[in-house]
Length: 162
Image 1 (cartoon, one colour):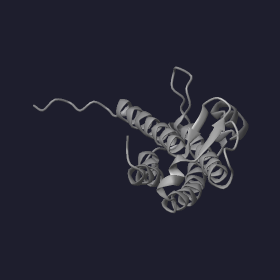
Image 2 (cartoon, rainbow, N blue to C red):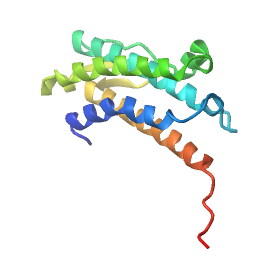
Image 3 (cartoon, rainbow, N blue to C red):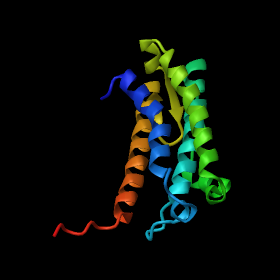
Image 4 (cartoon, one colour):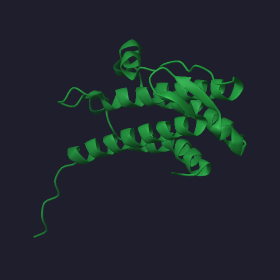
């Protein structure tokens, strides 16, 4: 289980890591959905921006209220509502950066006992600030790995040396 400083560092690094992964992709590559019907890379970027906004709001509630009921977050519903495919990746990355800067500042100001503050989520049940941040880090790591894997599958095979 990573310490709070490591969790904060991972959250802080996500916008730059994501920007580097999508920087050289053109619009058709950003919009292409996998054959299994999953999200396009552009939709993943949109999801990460919305998830960063949700995390920031959830942390606000956890830190300013006693045992709050956190709002639910349905990524599929957000994706349909927001139509990420019509948005610009640069704008989505700016949103992610803005929310993430606020979240990182909020987390850096926490006392050790604040990481144990609890709230209730409709589907996940009772969870602490730490558990919520761990969930966010795991989700982001999973999506960054997914984008990296797609890039590697797209890379042309290198011919063997002669």
